[in-house]
Image (cartoon, rainbow over all chains, first blue to last red; front, side):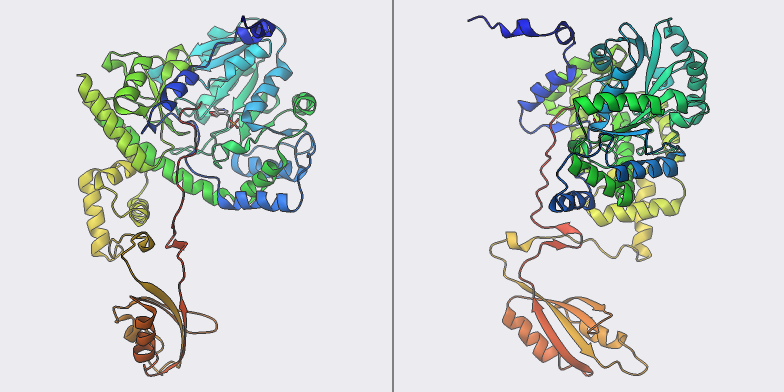
Length: 390
Length: 183
Ligand SMILES: Cc1ncc(COP(=O)(O)O)c(C=O)c1O
């Protein structure tokens, strides 16, 4: 029987390219005894006080919807948190929206600002969701390939080169997934100058803001003149180890936040209530846990960078997030070949760099959000793999 | 291998950590969590050479900051193993000029005694004792502990089950519950 159902699909979704991560997921899932450095989330379980606070809210009967924009107390806490940590001042009443993960915040941001045909600059290698969400919002993703010689740091002149009369916005991500690269204040200032000059909107995904290891983090929204043209995206997934709770937020100019809330109220109503109560506790009493996890990530980062360098894979020292992005060019293999052979021969899963954009070709993403024991074993296996190649 | 690159990288890494005290604390914390951590791994994590790390650990041992390396064992997993632990609350009359310390010492010198703490509150010393059987512990308490000069009373609590000891959860389910590859 011929399956008619595909004929119902929209062109939009049919034209969306399949995720390269999906293929690796299928390959790795089918194998036993795999050590995975392919995971984009913390290995830590959510801090107990957060879990407990969420239990408590359920016991108290907080099982209904919240306000569309999220619990007011939570928005108030987010306001304080952004102010204390990043010297940002967003009003809880109309400049903060609580969302279902940073993922939904990105989706809402793009749907709120993109007109059909508008171009949105995506800086690659990048988190895999940006370009598809731009397309789904009716926009055209225009990619910039950052250069490994610049440690994958976006250069202001690259933005200028990508700008056309149709350019509406640019998506920034520092600390970056997959490269771990962090842009410092000076670099952000130079980018801000270009953004202002061409009257662009910035969507700044700062979900890894807490996870910087060498220098204090600077928020793009805190750069002079940027607050009124930036949508700040963040959430609880990474720093607080709350990926499965699906909770994030956006902060920005009230007109944009209100537009995003308009879509949100129809499409989602509100973010999960029990997760919001957990997040409230995370912001109130969670900093100590964050610091502990951060120390551990920093130590593991150092460990992995040294181990990779020792086995002859070059990589820059990533200042944040929990990824290293070593070059595998000298093995003569493509990213996909390297990742696939490593998986088959040594049962170590990494993500081939090309799934994050063409400029990721020749690289692999290794997450160090794994126990040291796992990382140690993974590094030993990788070393064997590389030695066997020669 | 591109040695040049390695040197630059290391130089960059070394800059990061800050002064020595910070590294000492990090080493202590790492070893407290896992006494079997290899020196090579510690060295990589704190950006020191293996030799420097060995020296640092030796120094911490010499200074008595590191007292020893022990293993947390869940003896309930060992079927042949018989053993009981008791926590004993001890009330004492402190001896003039000696305070509690002398009495505590007379207790902690017994090898059966695994821990002794001076407590605030309803009693004075908390003594943890391990033995093969409840009988053995009872005998130790009645013959050795309660007969010490200045011991007023003892209350013995036997441990029925260990859930968590020294920060380690027994029977913890530490399976990785994440999907193998994700964005
Ligand atoms: C850069 C980046 N942005 C957003 C997300 C999605 O986060 P959330 O779990 O809050 O939807 C991720 C998760 O991998 C990410 O790496």
